[in-house]
Length: 464
Image (cartoon, rainbow, N blue to C red):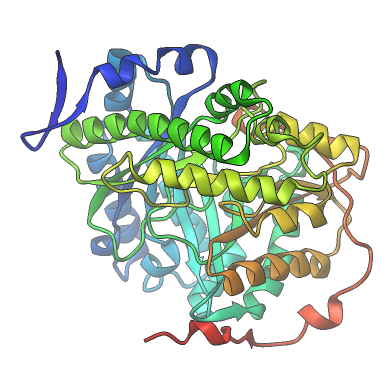
């Protein structure tokens, strides 16, 4: 009987993979991403030309075998690996010495995009600024460069960390992001403002998240690391179909056991990728991340639990239970679980969520309530293109507040689709899917978001 060995130890029995055949073939189980985190700290230079050369050379050297290795594991074990990605140290830090203008940062973005193309990865994350407490002049420059950077690149993913439980919410950054999101939408309006699908604002962002668009390689991480994200909404739904009429204890136990099996697949891939690439294994992120494919939907799981549509009364409670049981099952199945882990609720990437929004069951306000108990936040939500920057900033501030007070990661990926309004639909293609334009509250928050400064950290942040 064949076993996988890692550092001389039997880690995973190959028969555990055999158990998942039906999950892979019929229930959309996949490894959503192998993400290689690469530190660019040793690339920093005061000369922009040298900095870009350093960045390109390090990424292409460290990640040269990433795609080939992922494809080999996929072929050998029959486990679909949907994406191979890279995350790097936030460029707001790395480019501070060399960049004197937004155009200088855009040059780094193009270098990252070129390196991603050379390695063959789908996306590269880390075109990011960490400004949860304050914003340097250089960090403001990289934020201001985001619309053009996303317009002229294909694989870049960008994030801005605007709040945390420890520091509070940087409302200057939140207000600025209201403008930046609109400018990004305008810059890519010929493609339904697709640039905004690659831009996220976060609170309490983890250093080891393998999922885009919020992935970056945290400064506490090693030089190079492999993080793996596993997904399996269809597997969980199929398991729950056998629990009709059962009590909550049975329901929870079913979710836990299924999450355990799914996570073991990720553990196998992570350990194999780590061994073959000679790179340390970081974390497994078990997140029920849906796709537009039929049967691969978190909303369908909620319906299987018992709500008519995502958004109906009881949805938040059902999602809280699902998220908790996924984490409990996953944490026992892997040597290191991290990242975000739980359930994602992106509207455009989940056909069940799209159906619920079109039926009128799911609103932005209900989604906001659901983000209190899920893994991330307001994700891939298309809104009217004439939404004001102040309103966008207000929605961002609300989401940041949920993360800050509840000591969890929250995020907002809002897409104001230029030229479209409620009743229209935006088409992004591939894993990004399509999204109905959702209405936003018409009442103003301008006087609130135009105040300067920072919302202080909550009282429970003082732990030392």
